Image 1 (cartoon, rainbow over the protein chains, first blue to last red):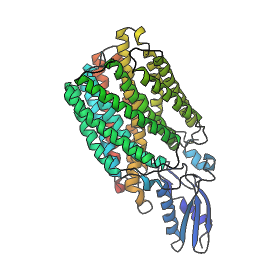
Image 2 (tube, each protein chain N blue to C red):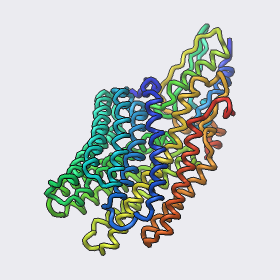
Image 3 (tube, one colour):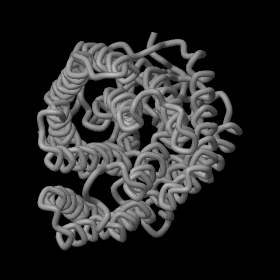
Image 4 (cartoon, one colour):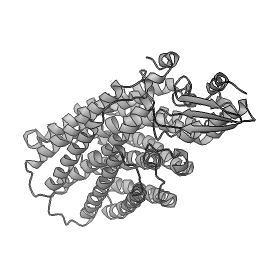
Length: 98
Length: 429
């Protein structure tokens, strides 16, 4: 069984192409639940109605499936709590010039 | 409930939207080339065939063309609704292209019969657009401020078209009871403040926070700006149907100016709350465009005093006013936003499905930012120089700076071409 940290690490390869930062450092991944044959990732996006909507959730699914082919992957996209810049890592902040 | 449906499913076909984008880029280069070739004509009173021809390449071939393409792309994403008909959007493109080409040639030759014919074709294309957008937007489930601005812009586009076609017929077969030149002012301001600026303003509330990663700002000023601008435009519509100028003209102009200033304050609030502190080239263009918007707003207010100004002085200022609206305010924001939107559109179409399977370029790998920065300096030098050339009625300066503008448009063309032609394997990082 993979650990949450392993799943989180693999999600660092999913990049928001407009911002150029990965979704973990952006603070978009809220929760990872690993059950018997299922991995559920609860996440958000920076802007509701973001044109990247379908792509990013698709990449998350593919990335996790590549790590753990035996598991079903479910991406639970939520808008509450709403994403704020406070959720970003310090590294991400620096890269955005803060 | 926030929208949870995916934008990708709502988006119209890439090939349809691409047509509009490519045509508008070609329109911009054609415009700057023809302005350069005809630089000697850019002086004196604005109602002259060549200037009207050039103005319509700018307003239709460049500005409206890109708004059409951008609306087809953005309205489904921003309002979570499918475009009513892709076929109508395809048909509209060709009718519009033929209509505007014929219209510009008719202006240059001042053939008023052909002008009325081709203006009718342009009008048909516009009406198809208005119908297609209205039919799409009636299905919107969650309305927002951007949608409200776009809906109003469609109404003013309709009025602009009606005023335009009435004037085209009046040139061929005079029937106006009011002054044609006065009515031209209404047509121009319906187009500038009602159609183009309304779209720019409304879309800015969505795109600028998205691109600058801004959160937690109030959108109240956006609502006030909407009320002010619309009140001003309604007053102008009434005013220009009256035989003589009344107090409604300065009051209407003041309302529009107040609306623009409040909009500027709204942009300030958005930018103050942004997370991405570094301005990329797209946002740099955008911010300068808003600065010029303030200049033309104040200039517009001053021009209301037409009767108190010396005719020569008024003529020059009116020309500078029109030039700065088209090349400063509108063109700079379009160029800037195209540096944000076009890479995304192309990337989404070509590489979205390849992420994780093979190396894909990032958006910034798709064009040369240094070239874009250089182009920014060239374009703005050209704008400042052209304004000086008009002010001093100096033909040498005019050829120099309109030539510089043409060269800067070639750099823009170069960057846009490299975005459209990006191939995954070669440019992958």
